[in-house]
Length: 483
Ligand code: SAM
Ligand code: SF4
Image 1 (tube, rainbow, N blue to C red):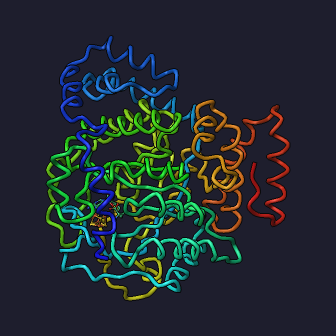
Image 2 (image 1 turned 90 degrees about the horizontal axis):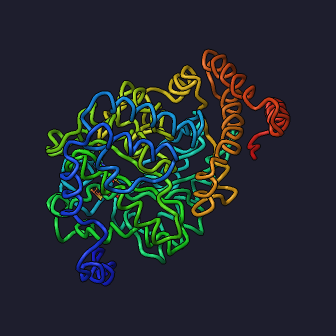
Image 3 (image 1 turned 60 degrees about the vertical axis):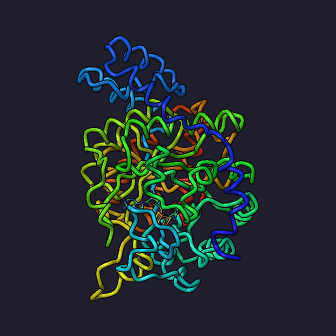
């Protein structure tokens, strides 16, 4: 069967519908209605946001359209406060692992697209995956996201095999404990198989929620040309029991204000359809230049640093219990600015070519043929140190996923702020492991200070003695301790 034919029946079902949950005209009507909100309007929304509840579209539209410096500053301050309240003073670390750049689609902005003749295509073999994973573990990684193009080379059998391979690699210092996936939309049956092999988060970015723009950038005759097949991919994931999901937008393809509204409508749709369970994470990459991809050099709706900062804070205020991921596509300067008021996950020590971890170890390497260029190429150790300098805890924690605290359960935990009691101690344990097993002397000293400060905050609470006991066991050589 031809590759496109495989999903044809399902596309047709979606394509027949006369509408979906993104109504372009309504979104613009809401944005236009609040073209110039007053300070009182903005403060009314901030008052509600203080309660750590998900905002309604009109409320988010008010924040988006706010151009008043004083109340924008208030937005930043509240976003920072909510981040601390819901997520605590920690940042979760991961690193991507590019498995294949073979792709049958033709997304105008992407270096992997089929028509890009400058790209040398490569899908890792199982042995090569093992080699990459060993290097990542040696560097201190515990969480990864596997990235695939969409082609027969990376069908569901291959994806499942590659996940199993990642989990099977054990070294003296441990293993990858959580493998997330960023791949094409799948059927319910395929998603059930991903669940069986133990994926963490299943990520699919809509790229743009704007129907006409989507059509323009994703040519018909490709799988990705089907907007709704992609839009409902998280519904199918939930139906398959994959309840830990990540959505996202590629900023720069259309007006950022519309896209933020799209992310909110997507969240509301999932919450309303699946018993309050919205996305676990939202990603908000900005388009960056990719090899052989003229569109990516001059995106039509490039987002300025100022607007980027604002949109991160607005997402934090609008969906306070959804994780926000800021990747190394952004420069270290921008990441440093946005982390405090919203971001809960970052990647570090990132290499984004297929086979790039091994290649970067070899001398005289050729420049990568990359999907896009990277903004923050510092080592994991450097970024860990920087987060410690901010007196935040770099976390490699995978406890919730492994204890089954995902989906509905995780939402309840997050909403009721129990995150603080599980996540901070677990972050402390994983940082301790990192400092003992991988850190440079400078990072170790900084990290120990951060640990001391944070452990002290629990003094007088029942969990205090448990934390001390586990830290002492880690010092003696035990690993993977968690609450
Ligand atoms: N093929 C799968 C898909 O399209 O969903 C997953 C892999 S794709 C490489 C992962 C993501 O990379 C895309 O969803 C897109 O948002 C992002 N991406 C593509 N081109 C990019 C560029 N030029 N700059 C930044 N991100 C880009
Ligand atoms: Fe392929 Fe994904 Fe790139 Fe589109 S974004 S060309 S589907 S890898």
